[in-house]
Image 1 (cartoon, rainbow, N blue to C red):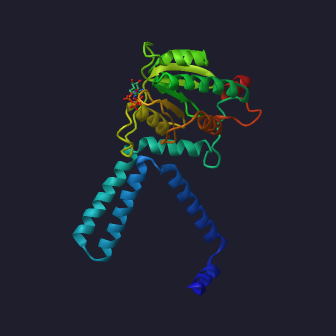
Image 2: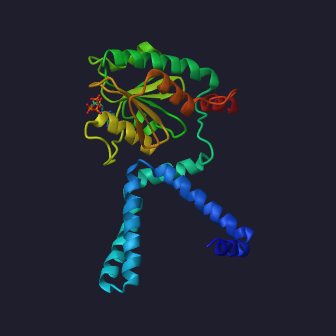
Length: 273
Ligand SMILES: Nc1ncnc2c1ncn2[C@@H]1O[C@H](COP(=O)(O)OP(=O)(O)OP(=O)(O)O)[C@@H](O)[C@H]1O
């Protein structure tokens, strides 16, 4: 066995090795991207179909093989339609060069800390009062299509502003509040609901909307459950629940904090013009 491996290594050129490394890297990144999302089920289903097709071909089961091949063809045509959000997210990740890095430059370093402090303060109060809330932080994918579904605010973030929005007598408490940089752009926004079948039945539409927006974009969404006061976060189509203040803060720093001396995208745009 070892001998055969050594033999194989001697006939491999650097091109073959590069080829193998690249394919492994792409598969690894694809697995990371789809893990925990509804695309994971699809890939497992496709793998089963593929194995069954190959086996039926080798065993000479002509009709069964023909049926499987037809199903595979129809399935491959249907995938881009059904999985349009995931494909869009994947291509956007590629376009932003985020295959290698995951930081976001939307927030200027100077704006980020005060915004985060106010946000965390608001969440503490929302949890204590068991006020349901859904707060979305825009990163590099523009969220205008969702901002436009709500009521425009465009105000500086403060804990008081956020808390007031989610008070149950507020007309804006239904739907999501969307933050861009250090500004609250809109509240009462309607977000797409995820169709992830793996989501626990105890989670309702607030959590589904948070997952939905994180599947359609690179945004980060924070949920405060009205029923339990549990704080959760979604990013890249994945939900993390039961967050305490410290963990939530650290996750937001990891996901949104810009490197030192970075101008926010909006500041950068104004220096350009
Ligand atoms: N598509 C949507 N976009 C934004 N917000 C939504 C959307 N659908 C529902 N919501 C919000 O979720 C609220 C309903 O939450 P629901 O109780 O169904 O969800 P949940 O995930 O169980 O949350 P909770 O734990 O707070 O009860 C609505 O009042 C509304 O504010």
